[in-house]
Image (cartoon, rainbow, N blue to C red; front, side):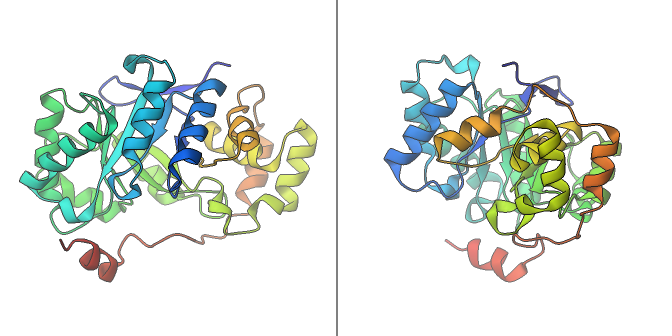
Length: 281
């Protein structure tokens, strides 16, 4: 099953469908899920320093038998390691845990206390070949605009909460105009809502003989968004990947647009108390 790719501004191709490993805390379960994903056809894996499973992911990928060049691995810089020097240390720790010489994509996880220092370090690490592409996560339009004061390389991707209840249309349009690729975390709303029971989605799912989750993930793909659905269940891992054998019509897309609630279910990007607290240490 061919996975669609999106070309980042620097020419690097990112598989549009990946496996997110957020909240995968049991090492055996995580390893099994990653290996099943590889067997299914996934080549894109998304982790972060704060998830605490970089080492498990790296080992599982090595044991899968794939060579490094076949994989696309993303990790993220945590808030307490922001700053020029600490960012360089954080990347070395991440590379050591993953057992690799380079990352395909490195993201600043949140707009924290020293984004400038971190970004300047990431630009250097990118130029040195330690990172193939650099970007951000949970950044707003204002955050992205503020980076123009010092960034010589524009963020290539912004990973943000996105799903039909919160399609991020304004941010998406801004990023399209700026040449920043849109990546969705929580593409199925993290199971925190009744999204997958919505009658509009059920009707479209019935038409294509697909699940509502597959309809939502295909909606993301049609919008040109990179997705990293998380699951440790083999059936769902396979199901989330099986979305390349059908396309949604413009009418389908318009129907799905009607269920937008403009409701965020994850943390807001400007949660200053959270940023302050997690930046210590």
